[in-house]
Image 1: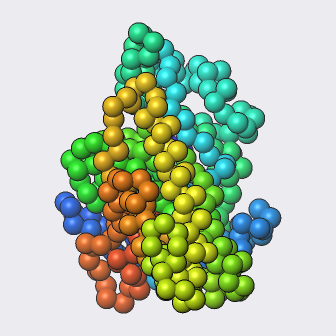
Image 2: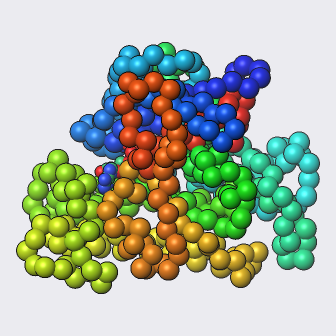
Image 3: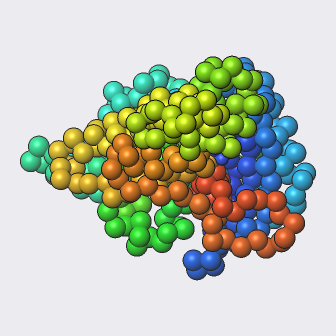
Length: 369
Ligand SMILES: Nc1ncnc2c1ncn2[C@@H]1O[C@H](COP(=O)(O)OP(=O)(O)OP(=O)(O)O)[C@@H](O)[C@H]1O
Ligand SMILES: [Mg+2]
């Protein structure tokens, strides 16, 4: 969306997740990051994925208002993001043209790439650069299409909670932004990385090079899938399954799916969740194969896998991803080196769950990905 105010200004990162609403205010000076304020509301008990749009909106407004009441934030300007099935990101090659012409031909050229009625979507493109395609120089663009409905829903949630919508982002781009800010553009520039953000109901996968996405996918194997597997195998209620998942994670087994030491609860948890972990790994592998199968990516290797989101806190997950994919795995803790500007802020700075919120709160008014 277009900037509401001229100039660069700070925004709140508002992450409307399906298990938690997170509101984060950051300040950066050079490479130093300071948490100015933070509040969250747990909405995991509301099973938001099964609610009607109206109910869902109401739950978010209520949770967001509570967050804003808990702490006094320094601005009303907010950045939110969209992800999941209502947004698609495609990398499309067009014949060379200027951005004005691109704008004009977009509707027409983009239509085959969009699985929704083109009347119902908001579209945006950015030119990434030149690529060689069938002996022709074309320009590579990233095309983002999101259902108007979804964007309107997010804007309304912010407005009805007393905030001003300043930036509408995509989860995958917010993640890249956080990674680049925290690790520095140089580090982010050196080779290809895969960022895997494991939330409660969605896992965002993107392959990035030099801060630019090359592949973006969302899948529905995520934190809740692990909880569900535990619940079903061990006949537990959701709360107990969540507790066991967080306590033992995948620490109770060997790497071939057999549980070490029979009968023990951590081994049972491991056996129950093992298929979900394998599914997640094979989806990651599929994204890599898709990317490296492209002509323009021949010979390119993914140098590391960066996992984030609450699901990245799962015990032994990094080792088990490495065992399947043989690519070094790193847990991304965007606020790991951040300081608190006020000791009364309740936040676990070591958590990987802040990746989207951090990426959003590092945006400025006028940023428009
Ligand atoms: N220590 C832990 N071990 C395993 N899983 C964890 C741990 N801590 C949190 N999780 C899981 O992380 C998930 C929540 O992550 P996150 O806060 O990133 O989700 P969200 O943004 O609310 O959801 P989504 O982005 O999918 O809408 C939950 O499934 C939760 O059980
Ligand atoms: Mg999330």
